[in-house]
Image (cartoon, rainbow, N blue to C red; front, side, top):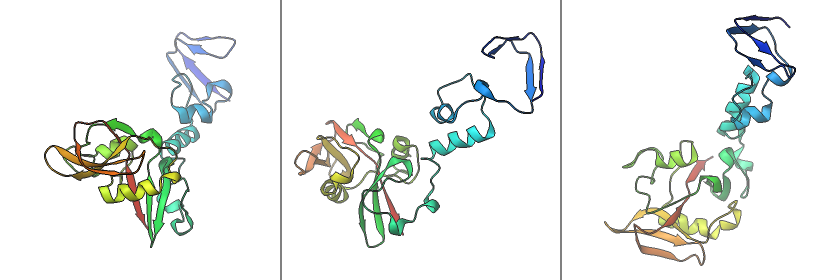
Length: 202
């Protein structure tokens, strides 16, 4: 390995470099290089990132590098984990429903603007929860079906979950995950859980 350093530099016994004017190298090894775990975690700011580590970090942000084209949806069964950590909770007639992971769940009053991940009064709010496009908050009918499929969620709360269905200026629809009953007149200022969904056609 060839390393060229200029400026006032100190290299200690652990090979830590401080006070660098500039440095370049054709290869590096050892504890200067971020491990794959460090690259994927993205919390360490004193390691060198190689092209491989950058690729691994990007893949981790994209759900392990899995993209839709990597998934054979026809053989992806209910209960499978897919891109972004979401779980397949329903599959019928070429349609797959995916619920976002519990890490994407938030508590909120009625989530105006979460109704669609790509539009709405507050654009991309559902996308903001998951960090990915194509997610939305389910309407009341879809949410009731999702309740019956709750055993395939990674985990869920016993609170009410908000749907995107609005009743009037003051009320919207929710489903209580304690008993599964729908509320068609839930006051929008009430606290509820919000979990994005995604639908895939195959």
